[in-house]
Image (cartoon, rainbow, N blue to C red; front, side, top):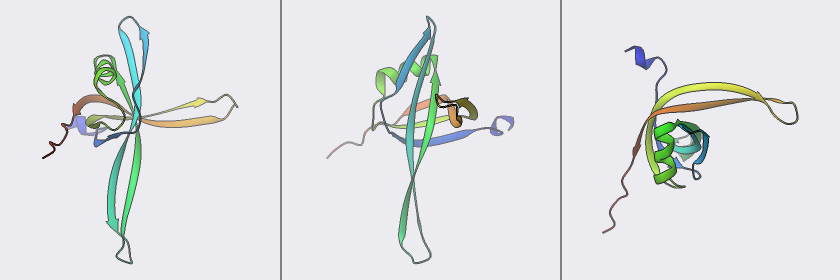
Length: 114
């Protein structure tokens, strides 16, 4: 159960094509976001739909898979860990980023059209 301490599992749709960078001969990183949707009924009984965006980071083999097979609109399931980092932008403002470092990726098959 120790692997549950920082574990995230999401299923969603890519909001854009993966941005893949080659860092060295053996190192690649892919960055992109996925959208997850949720719905509920508010106090008035109206259906409310919410979309959450999640930033993903994939390294090496998974980055290569993303580069070859994923594109905007692809549906995927990922598992990984939540990470946070900060940086200072060009204007000198400190920015904070929360990302999911993906350890497992599953591409969802398209529904057959009948």
